[in-house]
Image 1 (tube, rainbow, N blue to C red):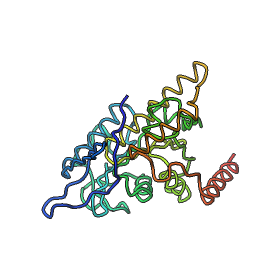
Image 2: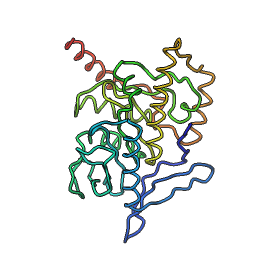
Image 3: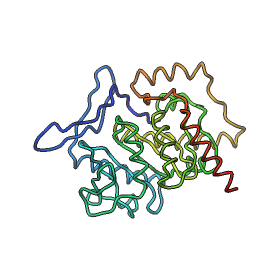
Image 4: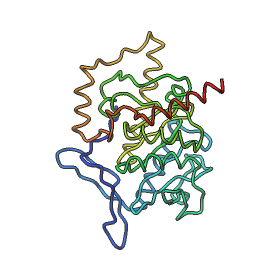
Length: 278
């Protein structure tokens, strides 16, 4: 099973050359973390590569899904709107600011930028965001099936103590973005109810592999339920795994935190609104 490499820091890359910008793309963990730097063209190539992988894995259809990467000085490379991920090339990519204004490129930005913005603003350490609709994970979100209970060892180290589900919210809903921003500080990958999945990382590789792991876990748990049900890991097994995750530098900022009072109030309003519609 693929497992995202560990990292010992979460620093945002800076411009280190007055002639040409370079960016952190791949970090290798260990006692002495080494971070490779890549040119803008290499970053774009990585965005295109992940886009193509989403299509190859059939985690997107039509114009679904989007990929972005944080650049220095408040800029981001992002996939364009209205293009199948299998057809994305580096000439189609756009560079935008945090508000989604296109600074470079002739294409339009995808319409779900607010999801990416919420994650980047909540997590200064996050360098890459991937959004897709992998079938098993998305089906769990549609059916209201939780993936919050860890059932295997490796995903606990890579993803933490279960996969958080974010309640459904309409596009550009301010209350929904509050929910996502809070969840962003407690995990690195999420199910979006009736929508799909999101993952983040200090590199595009991390974000992609975390999406892969979410889908893999959703598939395993779906199959396990047809064979008699899942058997979650015990607390005694999970605790040392979470300690290993922390030592590897993979823990989200507030991974062990519980939802705030404001968040609970927001959830209550969303549930009340849902009940009024039924």
